[in-house]
Image (cartoon, rainbow, N blue to C red; front, side, top):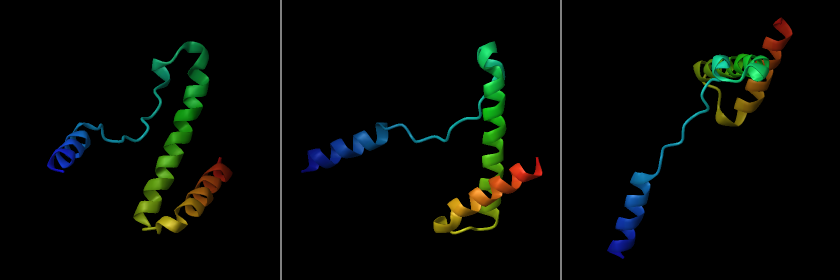
Length: 79
């Protein structure tokens, strides 16, 4: 039993932590994909802004999706 606990603990320590998706850098992609990368980066920035706004407004996890959708729609309407 001790061996199993030690094995599970070792696996947990060696596992890589989950990371959020990094912002796309349009300068690091092939020229033919640069426009799509710029659009993706702009979308990622909008999503992060809405996520930070949700954190500041202390939105409950159950309401977060609706809040983010509303925020993204509002940002799209402004543009």
